[in-house]
Length: 316
Length: 288
Image (cartoon, rainbow over all chains, first blue to last red):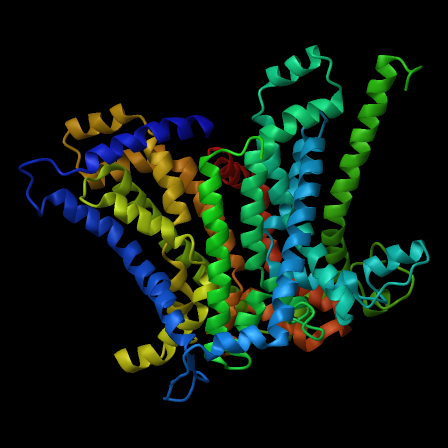
């Protein structure tokens, strides 16, 4: 894969050159028509279901509408003002931050640890990698239900395990202070495989001679990790931070199945709030305004990634 | 460790490594084990205060009860329809778009490439409300009928593809130029080159993307939840979540059996194709 990637970048430049039409070509050359035929459907669907809705979303965010009545009332920036002043929305932003920082931080740290482990020359490590990766492919809705059973405070697996240490299980999903940790645990369990696999690929890409050179310089295991592994992994770690943040922002199924944003909004995150305002409370305007906030945040993070991935963050 | 020989140190290191690996595998595997074992337990076994790892005798009737608790046959059918059409359209769109971007001349091609990449930044989650309105009232006024609660509405917003286009374009550009030029010299048109040269040679990347797409469609949750209204249009992920809401914590055995219905096809795909999927995902991350 790596090799095709490299020749790929060389070929991109070539394709840019070819893209310029040559003199004497008919405007309606066969190739142009073919291009439109090939790209058209994809682009049409994008315009209809991504670009246009983005614009429509901005318009909706300046209206008051219950999704049913024929009249949409223009209200200017009222919806944003409402969000700005609404304590539930503040809580939603806080929850989103809490969920994102904890879930991303822990799954990256654990993913790195597991990747370091599976990078050792151990037998069955490919089997272990497969097991760790499996939950990433499974439906979040199904996973959420399985974990609701595990978290059952009386008959769940976790209650039983805690019982071995004579700890009484909290009523995870019905206590405001425990519901979010429960959601975070499930998210990490599901996504650990992804961070592990990506870190593992990164580790395997580090040239062995760097380690050999460090060894000759007398660096012990920890120094080698500090001075070779970590800096060499930083571009991958950065990629994972960004993709994981975007994935937590869009994480809906686990929350919807396990807690419905509750209890008392303790697991209500931005994406859940967008859904709830739109399709439970039928406040199209507020939902669209919240969606716009979500979009701006995601856009900002993506732009940061684009900026920094160009200037390679080896020592970042 | 000063008075241990290097050999003994190595043994200790190994043992620690295997111990840690076992721990990680258990941590990830036990919840899945708990689902399977729960799906075969009787009500008394589930609601008893001392835990049983395995049911004393597997109670297969949980599966029958789950199947009858909701129209799971119908849910399966719906999931299969939206997965096959959704992934199929994505694969076709990605292949044609990637081919055009890699091999066809067009003025403003780069602009189009950027337009498609930019779509990566607009997640479906942000467009659910406008798209819902589109399929409802807008379609109503355009063609006189709402498309809410139809297969088209579930499938179409997810039929365009940016990530896969990007992935395939990279792979197509990496194919040996000579083979394509040779086909051209032989008088092959672009359709022939696509069908007989590029698709067979780019098969690994197409298969990888197809797998990723199939799994994503099967697991899709938010959009099908919003756009379906009646039980007979629900896909599996939505079907089990409604069943869970209804039966709740009172029927864990039946609920776990129902959950297995959703997960089972994914586990099959996983057994046969996990390597492809892992390779595809890591290639995307490490090539930059």
